[in-house]
Amino acid sequence: MLNGADIAQQLIFTLSRFAKLDAADCEAIRALTLEEREITASAYINREGRQPRRCAFVLDGFVFRQKLTVAGQRAIVGLQVPGDFVDLQNLYLDESDHDAVTLTRVLIADLAIAELCHLAEARPLIRRAMWISGLIEASLFREWLLNVGRRDARERVAHLLCEISVRLESAGRARELSYDLPMTHEQIGDALGLTAVHINRVLKGLEKDGLIRRQKREVTINDWQQLRRVADFNERYLHFGAAG
Amino acid sequence: MLNGADIAQQLIFTLSRFAKLDAADCEAIRALTLEEREITASAYINREGRQPRRCAFVLDGFVFRQKLTVAGQRAIVGLQVPGDFVDLQNLYLDESDHDAVTLTRVLIADLAIAELCHLAEARPLIRRAMWISGLIEASLFREWLLNVGRRDARERVAHLLCEISVRLESAGRARELSYDLPMTHEQIGDALGLTAVHINRVLKGLEKDGLIRRQKREVTINDWQQLRRVADFNERYLHFGAAG
DNA sequence: CGAACTCTTGACTAGTGTCAAATTTTGTGG
DNA sequence: CCACAAAATTTGACACTAGTCAAGAGTTCG
Image (cartoon, rainbow over all chains, first blue to last red; front, side, top):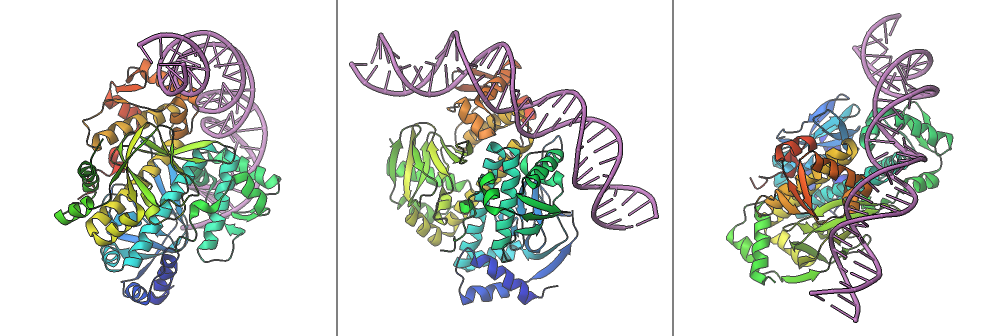
């Protein structure tokens, strides 16, 4: 359980990755109505077609964003880790074009869109940070398009494992060469345009070749350099250092 | 050839799709240094890794954005039509994460990033419009992820044809049920995660079934309703009406 | 402790890729 | 504006990655 000051600190840490905030900015963030909310795994935070008035900021746990075809096929189009905003685009887009769903039990700060809008208007540096976070998100979508469109199954899986490792690190945790990946094979498949059965085969292949180790849902990257090479992973698209 | 006033008018039209500008906003846009530039087909406007100081606004022709794997595989991750900004994200992201390439001969307004930044700071409604245009772009990436990840070849091609038709209409042209699609089969394949040979087969299939007609590179949508159904096309993700 | 998910594996299938060659279209220099 | 070279399209034969189906084993959670 976090109190308001802890939540504000998390928000400041996240926004500081994108722009150098000043003291008044931090003050304005602390002045927000910060409500913590715990949500169970596999719960909808938001649904396509809705017009949400609140925006979640992930404090702990994983959230994913999904879109469905009429036939009921699912694509997971994004993953949010602690320190990420979920659906910040709803600040200016009325209608959601996708669902946001919890992957695990999740702790979020439940922010009012109206307050965030006001903050963006009043505080140029915060606005800039929020804008940049959306621009970086778009860059991730582009990399995922390359991944799903032009890499084979082994490369895609390796790429996702690299990305998660690096994003967890940047979220302010120590480098996570070993982390709990709370996605089922079906969910990984939906994120990569593959089937659960094939994900299983590929993961076993990566394990057999000594690139990773698995125990339950914990993944350990044994050989970062080689996994990176297999994945064709280059972290440029994550735009670390955007706070310039 | 367009003069400065025509270019300003185009910019105002585009931004007005995203926010209702006032007279002072329009004045500020007219005050920009508006340089028109003509670029040949298949030319790079920007390259991955560069730090561009200028941003293109498409006046005529098509531009696409691509990313490459180390193996040299290409994914086309986006398409810009007249009225779209190319790489507006460079306002706040220093380093490009992808290439921008002309598909056809193109007419652009060559805008200085510094001037656009200043405009965004000074004019709240213009800023809002620019921000929203980026948010909608991200929504397109998500839909493309669904398309490439979870639709089969026929559905993907149909979806792209629907999207282009609708986007051309919204760019201020009459509804383009018949339009010139200046992409080679290889480029369509790169945009959809397929090969040129397969694109050819799918297009012929759609034609045989009477959904479209082709003559050279002109595409005519014969049966919009059925193409839309095949494509599972729902224009929600384009966020028309975002100007609320 | 049992029910409901997940994971794993094998056998088989299907959709899309690869290769190659003929044909058509496009672009360019004279 | 023509002629030609380069690029793009078309087609068929064949290959291969990933999908489907199914059933048993393992795991999670109420």
